[in-house]
Length: 152
Image 1: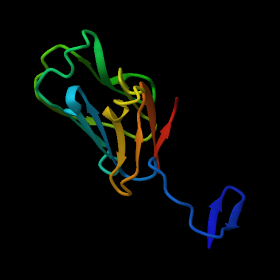
Image 2 (image 1 turned 180 degrees about the horizontal axis):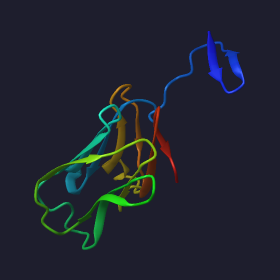
Image 3 (image 1 turned 135 degrees about the vertical axis):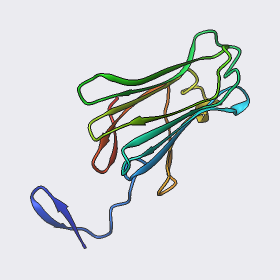
Image 4 (image 1 turned 90 degrees about the vertical axis):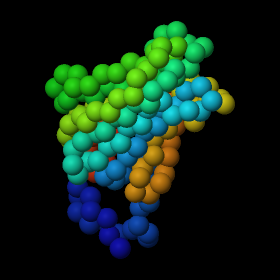
């Protein structure tokens, strides 16, 4: 078995395992109080679209400022989509499709993203291999030709 590298073919013992960042279909889940999903973002690299779905309700009444956010920037830095979710503010259900191309950036924040018991409230899932990772308080991804790349 061989791996293609810049230098040419390199013999490998076994196929390199795919990571959570390799693939064409990804989903981010942002959860609030009682682990209720407040936002779901699905990305399909083939169609070059992100589907943002916000759920109606109060995300987390204990927080009176930005609880979570979703931002998409194109490769030149222009903001294509920006949504701040305030914890104690009533959120209306919303669904929006956003174009995303190779080189663009997708940024997520979640105030509880690093809390020991609540870090599962901000998760990335690779829909092809079912691998997951915590997003943390802030995470920026750049879209690549093979999936995603973590920037921060």
